[in-house]
Each structure stands twice: as structure tokens, then as C-alpha cells.
Image 1 (tube, rainbow, N blue to C red):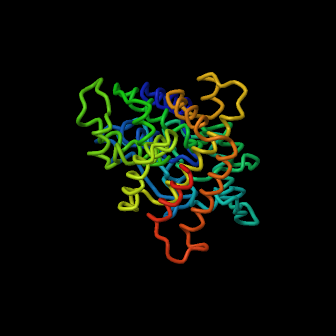
Image 2: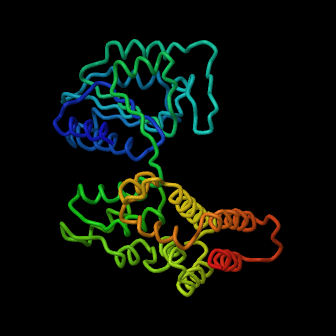
Length: 355
């Protein structure tokens, strides 16, 4: 996120703001900023006296403001970091959670809310107050949100879409002067999902054994993350696109023997997404590489696979495949399925797709 990059750049230049309100669905960026402030603003000797870290479940807005109003001892700054601030009741008036429900909070606005509004009007220059408000979006019509947007560094993060994750992985490594091919980035994204904290942790492990400028390989991913370079959904998609019956069956045999590594919901969701995009490819008026890749939301590196699949699977067949996938998904959940196990369902699905 460009906004996060600018905040971190300012912090590294020791350009500090009195209040930071870090909110939104993607916790990775919130942690990135708060961790930097926690570890770098004060010297080790200063933290004992001038740094306070509290948690939303265990504190109140009034207590937080009392910490923020303290003056530094033997230093220039007081740092107050509020983790899990989404649990502070006063901040949840008019806040929508992930399930869309709204917590209306108290009927009467608590005195501490007015104290916060007053503080935002005139924050203490020697204090850096950081709210880490995760997984929710604050209602911007409320008085608190309006004041925070006007008076504080206000950040609202968003979850990445699945198709954005491979590029994120490539850029993360590139910034640290390492390389990765689109195929391997896709493989990692497919296996780990869009939890950026988890993905970053696994990438950091890979970089430990690489010299600067080195490239992450499929072998490294298999050895250190445990993702098979030969038996994964990406290779299954490729085998199906090429109508390689032998390879497709070898892969699903591996899936059947390792259901925890290749759970049905993940495999079927990936195949559904893949064949849905092949259907969309059929309808594109501009099938040139970059235009088609942009329309499908995929890396141009993979477009040849979609083009090949569109030749091997006419539109009518693709409609049947989507139906097969939905039926397999229901059966994997026990609907109209008495005895077929995961492996049998996959074998039946692949047979229907390829014949």
C-alpha cells in the first residue's frame, strides 16, 4: 500500500504525528506500522519509562487518554500503543463489523468520547498515540471518525483479492532483492491463501537460505514450506487444460492420499475459478495477451494455459464442467452422497471433465 509506504518512510525520517488510527480488514499493514513504532521510536533505555502497550479488551478510552497526557521522563516522546482497539466499546458506536452488523453502543455518548474528541483537537506534541483497530471499518459519518480523519493519520486497509496475491509475493521479494517466477508465486499464493502475515513469514523463511539476488525455486518451496512442486492445483489445472489424462490422475491420487494438504473446498474453489475464467476467455473480443490477462485478472505469464483450455473445452462443455464442480462440492459436504470418499469424488470429477 502506497499510504503505508509513505507512513513508514516518514517514521524512518523521524517525522512523527501525534495520533495514528490504523484500521481495516488487512491486519498485516496495521502490524507493520505499529511494530515499527514500538521497536524504533524510543531507545531501549527510554521504553521502560515512556512506552505503554495496552489491549482494547483490558483497558478503557479514559485510561488510554490518561497515558497519552503524561509527559516523557528522561526523553522527548511518550509512545502509547493500543492493540486490538476494536474491542474498546466507546469506539464501536456506529462501527460495522465483518458480518455487517452494527454495534450501536450506549444510547448516551460516554464522557470519554468527548474527551477523545477534545484530545484530537489539541493532542500532546510529546506523545505518539497509536490505535490498532483491526478487522472492522469505522462508520465515517460518526463524530469520532470525522475527527480522526481530520486530525490524525487515518488508515483503512483492505484485503487483497486472490488474484492480486501472486504479484504481492513477487513485489515483497523484489523489495528485499530476491527473485521469484510467476509460476512459483502463484503456487505459494494458492497454497497459503491471502493471509499476508502468514505469507510474509513463510517468505522470510525462504530468504534466510538465499544469497541477495537469489531466486526462490520450486524445490525450496517444497522443502521449506511443504508445497509439492508437482502435485498441486496449479499443475492439475495445467494437466486438465492439456487433457493430460495420466498426469491429472496422478495428481488427484496424491490429493486423495493427502487430504489435509489439499482439502476439497480449496481444490474445488480453485478449479471453479479457473474454468470460470476459461469461459470468460471465450467471450473476450480482444484476446491479445495483455488485454485478455487484464480482463481475466491473471498474470500474462499464464494466459497461454487459458487459451489452450479454451481450444480443448468448448463453451457448452465448460457449462457442464461448472455443473460438475458444483455437484462435487455438494457431495464432498455429504449432500446426496452415501459412501463416496474424497478420492472417489475427485476421480469421478476429473473423468467427467476430460471425457
